[in-house]
Structures are given as structure tokens and as C-alpha cells.
Image (cartoon, rainbow, N blue to C red; front, side, top):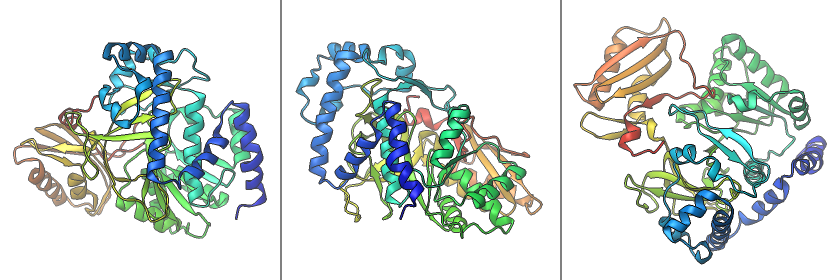
Length: 457
């Protein structure tokens, strides 16, 4: 049960905070907590109504879509099913970069500039309005409440985004104190900082951890290595997001912190797409987001087949994201969760297209095929695999005294079996492996797979 201060924050302070910012977060969350129990047919009807409203608004207020609909002779007033989306082209990152101003609605309210980290080489700049912010915050809030965590419960956020870390002014610091949120910088993982992070977590005794799985796993491993107990703090859940969650990360986070590990999938651009419930299912935020799965040619795929995830965010009238290519690969489920919610399921998230690798013969495989070769070798502390071309793959290794030289032959032999005997494998021993500018860590990056899988970055 929430303590008195948590109830004060959740029912008074945070609603006041959102009202002052002209956000409708509280009302949206309440509606979502009702609609999550609806039958799939009722949720589908809601999606159709909201899609029609979004497309009509885009046609009236957004120059980019007004011109596009006119060119296609597309009438949004006649939208009566989700299938009409297939008549519209995909929205790519390249499209947004070329039409940023024309994608802004003329009647937009509270537009705020955002950007992605630019892991593909160039940051994506876009804008989010009050409606979108309200719905995204409400979606996350609903999901944390599934785990018995509310706004105002003590929370540790391990994050690395320059946006969050760059706005830690005095007002933001006071707000975080009131909401009992502590932000730790994910890209500063020195031994001294890890000691400090462990001490802060023990001192704050958070009800929830939130952050990158790689960062939380790193902190957990540091605590375990140093014999510091962390499973006695009363942490209910560790919510991880923004990176692929690997099984070994889930295991060590859950073991060390003595809590459930809940996966969250989404992005600053695409929104909060799916969250894991206590029954282990990834529920789509169906009230706000329509998800399609398409093949390399852009054709829709049925449930159960892997393809690129395409999203339409229904709360983006100020800066529409319609049929947005995420560059991620996933699988839709065709069953409902035993938790009783009618929200559809994302059965599998296989990572970004750049998390895949391509063999010399053109075979596309998940990067885990290479990760497993390296991950469990004795003495390997950190690693990163970079597929430069079909003929060259590099591995950066951080090792300790346990690592044996013959392990390099094991790596090369394993990689050649998967990528091809003619592939050059270069191993470089380094003292540290840099994270992305956002603070995220990527075990594998392919400069080949994105073009092979037709990712329009």
C-alpha cells in the first residue's frame, strides 16, 4: 500500500504539476486504466475512431499531410478501418529531416523540440506537443502501477540522455525531490561512480529502478563482485527500456536487486509502444499506438511473423507520426494475456535492424549468433562487435588476467563458422569501450544489416 507521501504526490502534487503545464496526463491515465480491460473489438473500434480524427486533423492543419493526401486523393473522412493505413506511404527518418517544419501542425500547442541519439550516424530532430506528452507519460504511469509503483514512490533512474541530464537546473532538481526521483548518469560508469551508485541505491531504498538494461546490469555486477547485498531494499521492479534486454541481464538484475525485471519497449520518437505486465506479456499501448509488422518490401505480415515494426501514434496531431518506420524488428502475438487485459501483445522484440548481421552468402541472422561466441569466455569483461562490411568484422575486448590468448582463436573460429570462412576477423584489446552519446550500450552494430533489411534511417 502506498504511504501517505506517495498518495499526496500521486493525487495532489503531480496532478497540479501537470495542470500547470497544460497536460491532461491524469485524465488520460484514468481512461487507460479502464480501457485496458476492454475486449479487443472495443479497443479496435477506439483505434479506428482515433485514427480517423488524427488523419482529419493532419489534413486540415499539417502542410506535409495536406499535400500528401491531395496527391493520393485520400479522404480521411471516409476512414472506417485500420486497413486504410496501407494506402499511405511510410514516414521515415529521412522524410522527417527533410520536412520538419511542414510536419508541424498550424494549431500545435506546446511544441517541444526533441531528438534521438543518432546511433545511425545522424540525430533525428522532431517536435512533441502537449497531447503527445500527456499520453506518453500516462502510458508509462499506468504500466508502473501494474507493479504496485505509483508517482511519488522513491525511484532511481539510470539514464544517459543529454536531454534529461542537460536540464538539471534548480527547478528540475526541486521537482525531482518532490517526486522522490533520483537521476544517475548512465555514461559515467567508473569504479568510483559505481561505488557511489550502489551507495545511493542503498541509501534511497527505491521502490523502482528505471533505466537501460546494460547500465542496471553493470551496477548489479559491481555490487555482486564487491559482496554488497542489494536484495534487502524492498525494490519491487526494475523497469528497463531503450535497449534490447538480454537474458543474462534480466537474470543478474533480478538476482542482485531481488526484484522483478519488466521490459519496456518504445522510443522518444515512436512513443511508449509496449510494457511488460506481471504475467510476463508485453502489452501494446493500443489506445494510442497502432502497430504494423511489414516485410522487406513493405508488405504487411500476419501475427507470428517477424518484420519491421511500423507505428502510428494516435496522440500526435501537433506533429504526426503516421506509419513511422522504427527500424526495429518484432513479432505480434495472436493471443490474450492471462492477466485479463484486452491489450494486444508484442510477442517478440528482436532488436534494431543494425542488431542483425549478414553472412558473406547473404544470410541474415540475429547478432546473438555472434554475441554468444564471446560473452561467456573466461576473462571477457566487456565487448562490442562491429560488422564493418561483408568481409570484415571487428571485436573490441576489455579483458582481465584470466583471459587466455587461445580464446582469440575460439572467437575467430566461431565468427567464421557463422559469417563465412573468408571473412577477416580483427580483435582489438582496449581499456574501455565507449557508450553511445546517449549513454546506451550496444553489444553489436552492423553497417551491413541496415541496408540488407531495407531500413530507411
